[in-house]
Length: 287
Image (cartoon, rainbow, N blue to C red; front, side):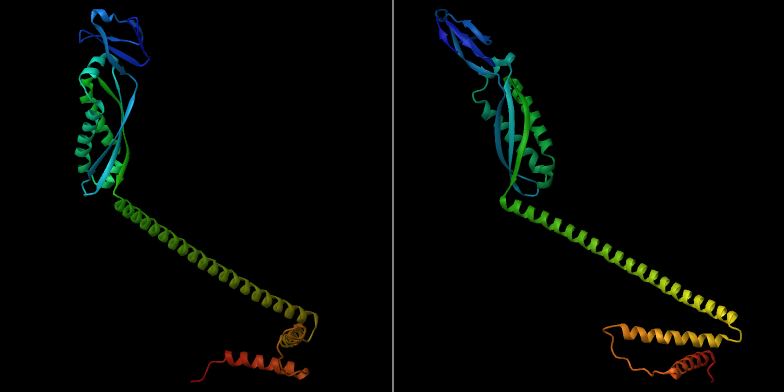
């Protein structure tokens, strides 16, 4: 901007206020203008049309009696077609905006609890913007954007809120952990039950296979060797199993010593004892 030889320069995004003998005459747009001072013309001042920002910190109390600091960010600018109103009607634009912000916030926040204040900060910002737009338009200003950028409770309140949140998360974690352990125990029990069931099936099938094999052996031996009975075949099977058992005891390196009668007559004694036990178990007991 300059004022040489009655010429003035107005920068971009700026307007100048032209007066003649102290009375407003015109708005000078960006560029070079002739201002003959000897005819009473003078430049009263300049007005920026750029967007400006004002951060307002307002302390107030919520409905549940918690003091908070609400920080509002107001973006505003002067209107080119109302530059004279913006220049002449307000002495301190920022103080005027701050007063309206205080008024709206202190009227809105006390109606809300602390949690609702955080959730409805956009509604608070909208209320501030509507009130400012209605009031400042009469002075030649436009409210571009209003933001509630921060809500700061007292430090003790913030610490208490963090502790409540931490306790809730720990409780949820403990519940999830207990539920996971419950599922593991159920699955482990189901697995053990299934394993025992399958083991029982295997043992039953094994015993059935042994019985089937013994039956087939007895029948085959009786057919191929005339004159033999089922009792003779069972005695032979017992003899075979007896010697197999003796062999396994001798082969095992860490087996404990077992003293049993050994001799050809021992097999007959074992067979006799088994048969006698089966016969006694099959006979009904006398009263």
